[in-house]
Amino acid sequence: MEKGYTLITGASQGIGREMAKYCAQKGMNLLLVALPNEHLEDTVKEIETDYLVKVDHLAIDLCQLDAAQQVYDWTIQKGYEVHILINNAGFGDSGFFEDIPFQKTVNMLLLNNLAAVSMTHLFLPQMKKRGHGHIMGTSSIEGILIMPYKASYSATKRFIYSFFLALRQECKKAGVNVSVLCPGPVPTTPGAIQRIKVQGKKAEIITRSVDHVAEIAISKMLKKQGIIIPGRLLRTVVLGTWLIPFSIKMWFFERMSRRYADQRVEMMKKQVAVK
Image (cartoon, rainbow, N blue to C red; front, side, top):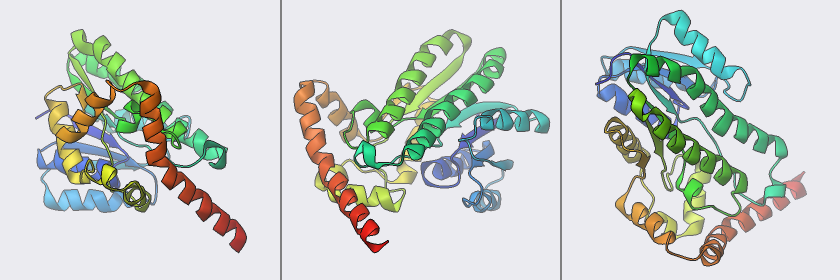
């Protein structure tokens, strides 16, 4: 077990919440960061009730340009040593690129990419100075298998995938492990559940529960695994796609995703008609 604290962003729900619970089960002290009014305090109370670990939390919007600095300053003021940093906060959207409000795309870039890079830039020097630590970024299988109709989201996750793998090589001699988590479909939100249903059996067979993904993520990170893809079948799918010509692969992904994109367009038309 690592000494000090494990800091998890996006810790109030989904994979982040389950990772926090699994870390607490392993006896890790926690610093949980998430948006205000996102049930973060409920997560803290549950962990404090069920596990004998220290837990503190900070409610903040990581889309703010200075948010990472505020988080870092908070840990310094409190005297917390962060030995494990899990950059999990993020969100996505689906549909035709031009139909997604541009400010939403900007916020996606700020949260999924800038926040993760900023947090890592601030906390990494401490870990290098101590000669040990773990950093993990949450990417997605869609960051490896470029997905039409999720152009911005897929690109942000591709960035996370590339950034943390490159950083892993930089940090090896310093004793700091860097991992990247690439989960497949996970039923964390109503939108995610709907996408899985629309895409049919192809998506359902590689879907994993949120608690399973969290457990695999933390256990593999602590074993210093670089790329973490939960599920043997999903890993096989990824390996298989590398053998398929790019044009054929993109044709298949476009067909698989188009149904959900078309459904989103119809929903938007109905909303406009109601207004």
